[in-house]
Length: 115
Length: 114
Image 1 (spheres, each protein chain N blue to C red):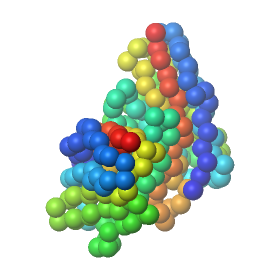
Image 2 (cartoon, each protein chain N blue to C red):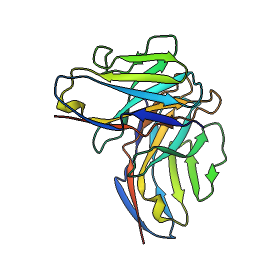
Image 3 (cartoon, helix red, strand yellow):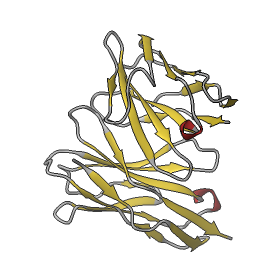
């Protein structure tokens, strides 16, 4: 398993600003993932972040809006840029610590409210 | 494309009773993995149980077991001896090994009644 922390746990932001969310893992992992969970909804994958390469974005998500950094094997950031109220969601990072088990472990999430 | 369907938005069960949550999925893949995740009000996603598609034997983890019907593309979760701490949103998820991408269902909100 893996222990994952996220900062901040929650934030209230003004429209048009940007917020960077940090994800820290207690072990080295190759693959990290960023999800969005809109109120009362399921999880939607935003992008896959592998260390040493550009993040891979899912349909409907673009790098200009959600830039991702992955500077090492234990850390990643997701930035939500030029925010609007529609970006109000919980943002979760997850990791797959083992290529043999395919399990994903999730961070506690960042609750973002855009006013 | 893969889709995961959970047809029960909300369910409730008496404490100590058994409840079954339904999940169906659609895929053309032959090799894949299925998972049930639990998200309590604290919102931490917790892995409950997983099933490899190539295994015919149903996975079991203590009070949690699955009924995996590959031909029917069905993957239900049975919770025995329900406890108050089982109250949470439960998500069924599908993953194909290539790409490690997870597809989640819409969730079932389970309430255990004392």
